[in-house]
Length: 136
Image (cartoon, rainbow, N blue to C red; front, side, top):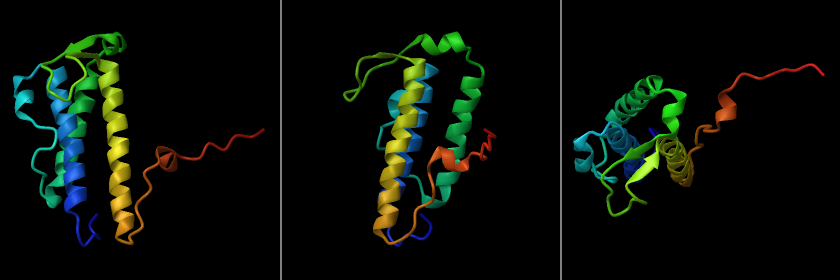
């Protein structure tokens, strides 16, 4: 993204990913401040994206590190907005949604990067794993 001449759309999309993670974390924590967060709030400044991303991820890691496996199957109730499918979902489905949501929007960012003639970074999980050299 640093190499892009026009990064407005990618900043908005990346900000949306972070905002969605923050909104859902407040929902699962039953934090009333969740209602103040809009899915497509004003984008963060480019130089702040990394910090906001890291803070958001760390919030989820901290929260999930205190959750037992059985808690993943418990429903999370929240005040539904106009774009919501009900007012309760299982925690595991919320976590999966955030993962899939992030994948979708990271792909959109990658396309916009390529549209400007820049090679996008690898985003495939498997790319970052060490090789598993198994003898037959």
